[in-house]
Amino acid sequence: MTVSLWQTSGPLSSVRTDLVVIGAGITGLSAAIEAQRQGLSCVVIDARAPGSSASGRNAGYLMRGAADNYAAAARDLGRETTRSLWKWTEENLRGLLDLGIEELPSFDRRPSCLLALSDDEADDLSRSHDLMREDGFAADLLRAGDAHTDDSIWTRAAPRIGLVNPDDAVCNPIELIGLLCAHLDAAELVTGCEAFAIESAPDGERAVHTTLGTIRASRVLIAANAHAGRLVPELGRVVQPNRGQMLAAHAPGTRLDFAYYANHGSEYVRQLEPGYILFGGARTHDEEGERTSADNLSLAIQEKLEELCGAWICDDFRVIARWAGIMGFSPDHLPAAGEVGGDPAVWFCGGFTGHGMSMAYRTATATVRAMTGKEPLPEWLLLERFADRLA
Ligand SMILES: Cc1cc2nc3c(=O)[nH]c(=O)nc-3n(C[C@H](O)[C@H](O)[C@H](O)COP(=O)(O)OP(=O)(O)OC[C@H]3O[C@@H](n4cnc5c(N)ncnc54)[C@H](O)[C@@H]3O)c2cc1C
Image (cartoon, rainbow, N blue to C red; front, side, top):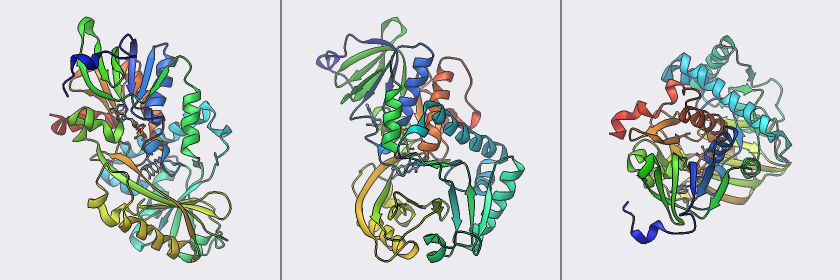
């Protein structure tokens, strides 16, 4: 986008900083925390407010791994990358524990459980269990008829088996955003400030043109996730907006012992306080319609969520809230980080494909460490693997 002379002045026009982070979701705030640790001056800007996009609208699963199970990931990505990715997500939670996530009122060390509703998926979960154990990850297998028969989903949905990640957790994502913000002491957070262009400036700096004026910085990190393509169009060819929809319901008498995922991660349900549940997903029932950056609700998906909620949880649930959020999907469903347009001063980090709670803190802090030459990023994370799309 071009920039008019008049747009370069504004309250932020006198600001010079080591790092500008664009986007105050989990990624941008985590990056700012790492920048502070390194003694860099840092300004985080957000077009709206911290957590206003996916980071404040998600289901709060702090789950190990990625969208699908370990065996499926090993087939698609290779065993080595899968092992590294699962470790990465364990490190993500460990990092958040170091920041004090356990102190959040909503934090619950609730294990997650992948449910197999078909024989094929049951074979996959069984194989995942074996592979995970071989690779040194804790995992348990539950079969129908084992314990948990009083758990509503085992009674009604009759899954074949469940694969339990015993060390996972859940939380209210807005509380997590609050925790990350509370860790910003040296870094400055500016809300209601949209970046609309990044250009080279004299003295080797970059000029970040925003709605509050032009900021000068030595480095820029784009942490705008699904919205990055509006700022840098080629990023939109890598990280594409996809809508996720959820509902919360009063579901009297319901008991859910785990934070559940079903149908290869397509649907998810967990208990809030007693008698209340969160139910989300079902985007595979209208993939074309959900490939959008519009965060309104769709009747087709909301009806599907209600149908599944009735089939799996209880008959007499009453919806108390419905919402949507925009996720950033990458072509291989792994996050991506690295230099943008061959400019060593401008980086991107995002594309968590519906799993940023589990990956963004680890990925963003590693990205800042890579930007400052402290440690290289793992190969499977590099943005340059999509060079054909970025050209
Ligand atoms: C319904 C739903 C359920 C989910 N459930 C889970 C879950 O249970 N577990 C899990 O691990 N993940 C889940 N996710 C995914 C997770 O929420 C995201 O992966 C994560 O929040 C991404 O964080 P982010 O900071 O990269 O992006 P975002 O949270 O999207 O933040 C990007 C920020 O950039 C700002 N921005 C954009 N463009 C500009 C600009 N030009 N200038 C300034 N600011 C800009 C936006 O305002 C926004 O605040 C879910 C997502 C959704 C939508």
